[in-house]
Amino acid sequence: MHRSSFFLLGFLLISTAAFGQTSSTDSQTLQALLAEVRQLRQDLQNITVAAQRAQILVYRLQLQQAAVARASQRLDDARSKLEAAQANRKKVAAEIKKYEEVLREHTENPGEQKGIEEWLPRRKADLEASVNEEQEKQAKETECEDQLRIEQAKLSELQALLDELDRTLEKSRPQAAGSPH
Image 1: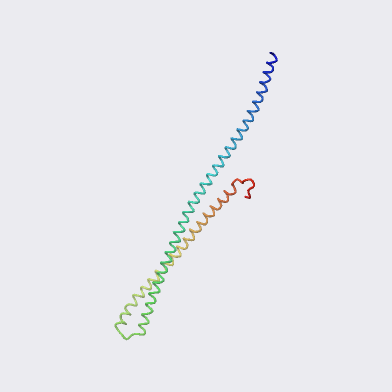
Image 2: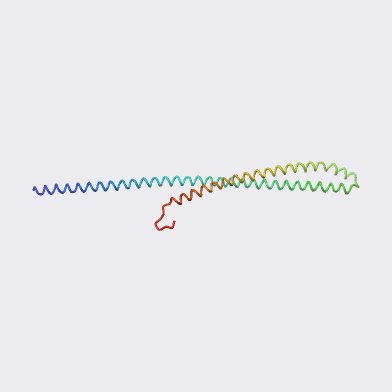
């Protein structure tokens, strides 16, 4: 019986030592798993932040594209109005020239001559107003061109930021084994 007590005691000591090793190995495994879970959580947070930044940039990019489109439309409108003002000025100038030639060459009818002489100063005033309107339209066109350039520069800046974010995300992407990237 003494021998069986000794055997039982020896068995308990060996199994306790084995439990101690298993406990230590389990603890190391749990620590490794905990560290990996923490790293995964950090990676997920980083990905979430990057995705949010990308969404914000895409939204800002869309808004800026709309701003560029509006500025482009305003420039097109300003150019159309300038062309109309230039056409009107040319038309008035041609009419004045035509009636001045009529006055020089056909002075036989005094009533017609008097009507043309009364009409010419009004048309010359119209011509002066047309010239002023054309200058205003040219200034508006220049202003619209400047605004379009500003909006396009902002759009280019946003596109560059989005490209930079894309490159950063591509670099931080885990590389597959044997992948050429």
